[in-house]
Image 1 (tube, one colour):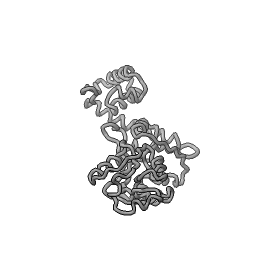
Image 2 (image 1 turned 90 degrees about the vertical axis):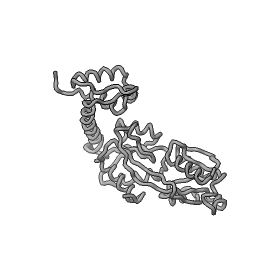
Image 3 (image 1 turned 60 degrees about the horizontal axis):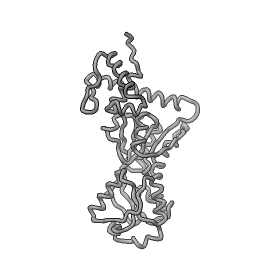
Length: 302
């Protein structure tokens, strides 16, 4: 019998191990569960030991399976690095960097986080995407994107093969259109009671924190709109349809670009920001520049 491991079988095993079941791996790989089961059986026969055992409705790695996964993680991380090199760094022309951000993140924050990568000596072809956090994390896990930006960390139970890198945090500033400023000139945050507000949808962690903060202060605003897209929320706020909030770190830009005024600030609620990668130790210089600049300049974090 050949001593060479079938890497297609190993990739199926690796995906099942990280997804926790054959059914989930089947959806990710777009391959029938029967095909994956058959390939896993061949791999177990090749190694002479079972790699999984049943645990409830899912699968649990055996001791041998844990050992194989350790090597598989290293193998496919190297494969991803090779893909990145072939995609840009060793070819003529700019390096491609694909960054996907959660659609609720303020676009000014996303721009400031990414901008340092564009200042590197080597030219960069930036591809900027956005979408629901679950969808873009799934793309990251299969290396369709290089980096995800979010205000919520990826949970290790659902995304075992991605890594969170904390960038920093910011308190919140609350804004209204300039022509409404006099109505909210004092008595913050009590002025938010019974006031029209524009809020992110509840899929975002900052919305949950603001809801809790308002409840603790016995404040009940009138919610006039909930938005997945922060740019659309700002447009409604600019039109005078309600109070909205943004991270205080971009307060000046928001006031200047939208002709709105700050009616109050709080440090009791802070929005946190994360860059999420498929590598524990990031080697891409563009991504490293993003990390360093966000921490040192945008959020003043260590």
